[in-house]
Length: 264
Length: 323
Image (cartoon, rainbow over all chains, first blue to last red):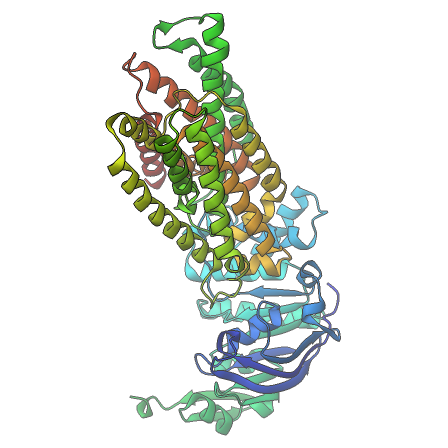
């Protein structure tokens, strides 16, 4: 895998659904993400996490400003070039027709490396499934897998694409604890090999252990970004989520907790 | 559920036996019983009819498979595009107004199909490119709804024409609407359309598979989704329009042939498209053979047979798999 190109957001403005009359999600945001970093994307429901991921994936035109990869505007990239640079793993999957798990992974492998022999593609696809502990499901119809299993197949597919920039939309929403930790290990290895990870997430404790950097959206246009120590703070989180967030710090690890009594 | 690898060799073997067998059955059976037909009957009636049946079945099945893939809808059916209803209006108009004309229903159907197809594309051109973002309404839903609306408008026109037709016309119209290969002498246009549709879509079959799994996701893999979708819908319209012009609106084949092929394990578009077409062709040849021999000398509309045989066949395959 080649190291990821720097990803720049340049005076980015985003409205809900990318529509000019949509609610403002991000008023103006400029930042640069570099290879080796792991960014968590935080914010309440509907704050624009998925919309930002869509924009960075190139699927949605920003309302103002630019997104640049390697200094080039996303719109100037050809779709097949972009496929080798970034992989997008959506939050929901709808599988209308039967297909095995390994064939799903193979799609991503073939898209970026069409020259490979069929047998090599299958072997690699099965290997990627093993990496996410779903090797035993390789020949199963993805429509008969559980939510967490389907999610791991999707994550294996995203990694198999071989694009250094990973855009993951709530990748742990269906994962149990052991597989959350497995994903964390995989993403850490990914960034150490020169990859760049941007992932939307709701679990602040997981966000803390996973991330190097964080971007917090409040859903009203304001954003806060930087190294995780600066973003994952009680005041900013409480304001964004609208509930008091308490933090306990132990050996450089922060534990996050909200007061359930306060929310009725 | 574990999926077995596609039984490609078996499928090729079955096809290699099934296609000639269906043709032999179709050619050797007639209203007067079994046997080698007279020279003229063979060349002027039997052979064109069997070829027309095969081409029609293949075109409808191919169109159905394409629609299901690009709209990501297992209930996709070639007739959902409104092309069939457009063709019906055109055909019925000429049957009423110019009944003496050579190839009256066929030419009317072609004109009607073309008009409906133009309308579908004009109204949903932009939508076919949209829908990449999962939050927006998928563009393919718009295409389907436009098709359904055109169909509804045309149905009203058909109902009107049925009320003003006289008794002789009415019988012809009803047969045409049910799908009828009787007198389908012009067999080659549907073959041509089917081949063109296949040549357009088959080289892109892998990308069509990816679109079926997620259109936005396919785009991030580098697939020009809007272009492929328009291509597939164009190919489906072309195949459906000519099939309807050849044999009237024959239901069932387009919806169910791709599912039957899928249930046998041939689930990749690369295999699904050709084998759906072959299965659809064979199926309609056999259905037509039954339609013209079962209660000979009376000829049943082929649509009746295709539903009578196809529905139980499909349910059997479906329920066996689920169990």
